[in-house]
Length: 467
Image 1 (spheres, one colour):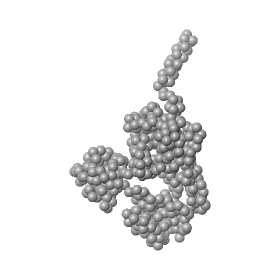
Image 2 (cartoon, one colour):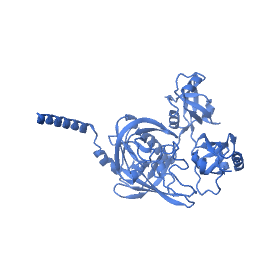
Image 3 (cartoon, helix red, strand yellow):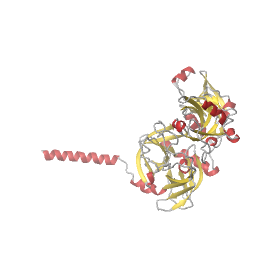
Image 4 (cartoon, helix red, strand yellow):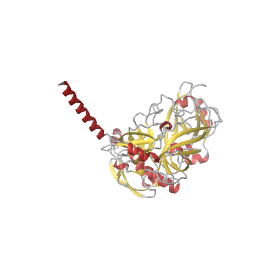
């Protein structure tokens, strides 16, 4: 009796095991065929010492909620002191044409002095950067080689949430590592990443995977692994990839002109909350609320006003505010479009000619290289007055460029490249004005600095210490 029962249990277990084996995918063929087209990328960069410790997120305290938020993959390296030194970091990439064109992330090769590509057959090549687009985090590099294995492109629009996907890359320098997972979400909008509808997965991604391909089960590339959410610096189940169709569009422009032309309206937008919708007489929270309009911009010429809610652009619905930058950015500059808005509870259509987004618009607020020559002030900032060229790029805004941040300023999240516009709502354009305003604040009190960071303004409270 017992023997018969054991036989039944064993038979049942075998059937269940066999059924599971049939349902689970086999990645061996994919890894064998696609692995040779995935490359290891090593970068050498000269860092100019600035007298501060280079943390993974410079000048952001460890207890800040954004300290570990979407940290980039490439190990940053860095050290203090005023001496120039070289750092090395690793990333991944994949071959898209047999004559040596390779896709990777812009943050992998950004400001690199030398880019070395290593193939799976152990050959190494010095790569030339054809172009890099920071807004989409896509870069195209080229090596001098022929008859290379290349990947096959897929259609990310056809993928479904829950389907299996595979990543191949070099986490921590371990070349051609294969990891698998599923698509967790599509069209994910991330902070400060307005032009990419990210693919979210639970594929194990770690430092060094950055720039590597994300495959579907057909062995087609559907994305470029770009970011992770992590509180530890390593994999925590949240990974994000750039859809390959977005990357290919960027690549085509980089290859033909070395830059990417995007549509531009010249507006600042924000999410529509339930309270705002009620105050504007809207039935729902769909759309993007116009919070500001640049002078002379396409939006101003078309008659858009602050307080308008854009609910449809060129026939495409705007469900949330993050939809608008992606749709506008993908629109060809110079195209005439219809913009449907909600104004004072009523809908109306405006005709608008899409402009071209200014190139390197954030260049004036980019971190300045070279050691700081001035001593930090009471709150730990080293500031520099803007040049006429920088003011022009900031549309005439006055302010002071942060070249170094230490002490309480660094603890509050202020970093190099920020522009201080005002102290306690009083505009500052000279060091004398700033120091006078700061020196008037008693020790232990908090001062509110209005900063320009990229294209956005924000208030940052900083505690004033010392005399």
